[in-house]
Length: 451
Image (cartoon, rainbow, N blue to C red; front, top):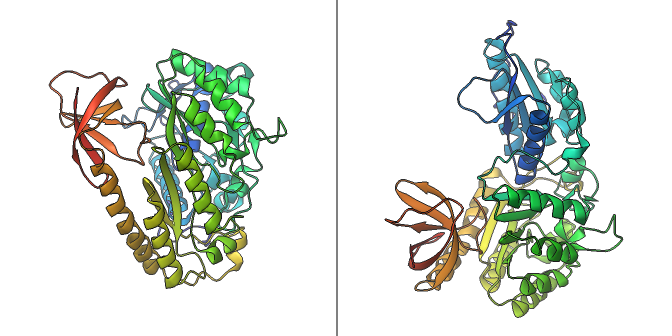
């Protein structure tokens, strides 16, 4: 077995081809990885439906006969999950439970030749930009008039909006440019039209996603135009929350913060991955910024919007990281007091410039360092949540679970951030906005009552 994915995967099955049925095709799309992959699956679903092909997403009913696995190839764990999912589906094909298995997405883009050799039972592999080729498998046409149209996988009250594809940054640890190519912005008019269509379908919150938000517009407008896009989206009637994910800190256009401040329906929220704080590590990671510059940037952002929620992402165990570097990162977190922090352990990815470095920190040590860092953040998160006690916030209701409602404030994004637990005898509608007074604070969640 090749070493491009973890070797403790399921065994490759032997095949005894059967035909499941002669009934009309029904496609089940399985999406792995990030929200950008989710949008790709939604667009694919929309195209298939427009071609009168039945589509479901991660269906448990098992009444489909074709599966498309939209894979992730970002880090080792994601690659392993993708390979195992493919193997599970080809095993179902071997048993005659489904007729065909197709694979698309980042893993397929990056390792197509390996996959075709190792798992030849898949009917076809496609890269990240080969949607028309997938449709040809169904004798379907790519409908250009559907650009921006998609079948929402998310609940109807929120949606992700991909404003660009690819990335021009050269971070040493990141394989995304290998899988997604160079940065390509979508025109403002196209994004505004999509936002209007989403609102017409009941969407109240959009989360802007890209590999790098701040690069938006450089390719098609020859300058950074994210602030202009934000103002245009903020003008869309019925769009109550706009949220920003994945903004690169180097050469950060501060006008973005001004746009957030000026427009009421742009959430006071910014997801800005910093990755580390030790200057030595930032240089090795090719982040094009220093710790001092990051501290100045965070200070300037908070000076302009004191109550903004700052989320960041960090990497533990990058090659050459020492205990002193870990301590410096912990000190940085303590000083900066980010509202939200996520952390990955370093994954040694071939094709990246960091792959030339020695991956010299054992996996167990990487995990221990990540846990150590998160323990610092856990205390900060609890303190920040306790500051909200007795205050009232606008909350969107996401779901009802175990007899209670779960929602979010403007300071929290879906899945990755805090939830607000609401006990209410009054029936609340999913997607409704309510005013909630916070009565209890936990490490990563809040509890409150509707007022």
